Length: 341
Image (cartoon, rainbow, N blue to C red; front, side):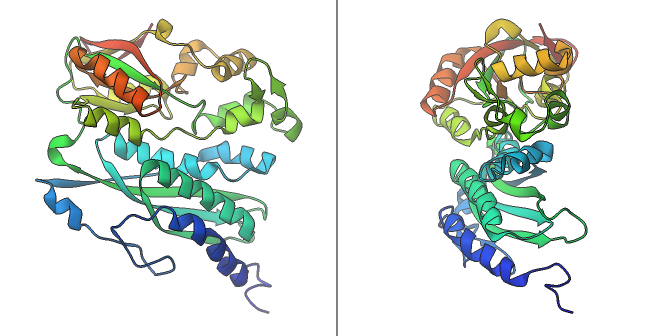
């Protein structure tokens, strides 16, 4: 008896590391010390000495049951982007500059090429965010997980000068809400998605005219990473008063998280075009509209609160970063919360 016969292939683990090294290397920043393969990732904090009061920000998350679609479509190079986005968007919406990221992959059996494809996606997400992928873990769990399945989670660290933190404290009556377009469903609400649509290869390969692509491609579209858009706004000299990453819980849970007491957000549904994937999902599943806005991003991955005088600058900065902005609502005095109307 040996470890391989028990279900853990150490050689496959070594091969996975070798295959992923090329992708990890592309994410390196000057602050990274040492290389891949050590017991920990080292990152120099020399640069943050220039900040008055540096604050570390962190975020951790996974991809959820969206990963089931990757299994069915045998497509593993995009869920890593989702994982990075879910962690790093949380750091960015607090005003943080992402510094580094670590991933954790648990699998029933280590197939090196599949693991390398997953890490390729993680590395791509890190490149989009400007973060270094400085470490990770691939754990083989025979007997605990099916051989052809895996789960993916991650952890991000960023930094901000305390004066640059986006806290929502100064949001006031008359401020404007600017939404930044999502790429689709992102990485939340897939348990409901999987109840609405038949989860078979044939179903996911079905082409829909209104989507302009197959159902599977529309659903698997990787989550947007908003680091460059938020940095572009900051570089334009605009102070973002509040920022909400629209994840699980949709508008009703996430927008209030950026509001101070006494501030009420109003989002106008007709201020932008809801993407076709949400309309199809709502129709097929006979889902109440309020439930849609309470579960999904409905086409807005980030919602910002800014001074009315800064709206044009914000819109221009977001477009300059390659993203699509919409003026979607406003802040009024009232009970902390959100009205979608």
